[in-house]
Length: 196
Image 1 (cartoon, rainbow, N blue to C red):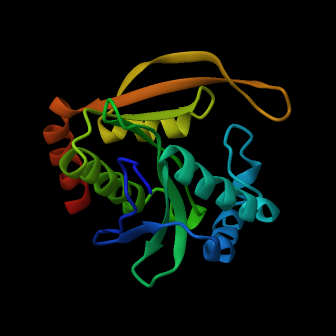
Image 2: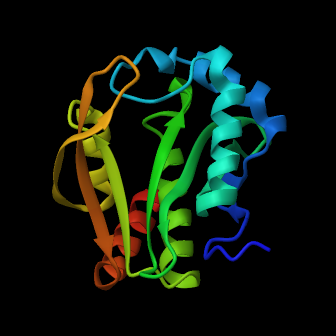
């Protein structure tokens, strides 16, 4: 029996729908990573086209064992345009992270990321009762850091030598968060950005 705090859910917006990831999403996610050759960004952990099945399999396994919730992002036509997830889910302290997010290049710098984050944050704070939502990114991923700050998150700090990559390089991770008392203003800001 699944005792995890975060249950599978589909989140609907004006521009996008987030639904639980499944193995049948491999072809769609392969197209996404090819849109801009996303795996070539050395400071990310985006799979190459041949690694998509393994990426999905690992995401689903972590969902079962630790309670992470992986999503695919669909445009209004039903085409897969990205992936995101709730991860590092802390059932006891009711906090989680939003991460492992990527969109095909043709959908970056659009309303997609803003609406995805609005949907995920609304569900986390208003349905799950989260006390905090974290975002983490590589020290060298300045574009991601800027996007996280635009959401209204605040930087908590940097975890030095936080992760080892397969090539033995170490990653310094920048940690950001939004806490429950900040959520009403963040929600207002994201809603305003989407209305423009």
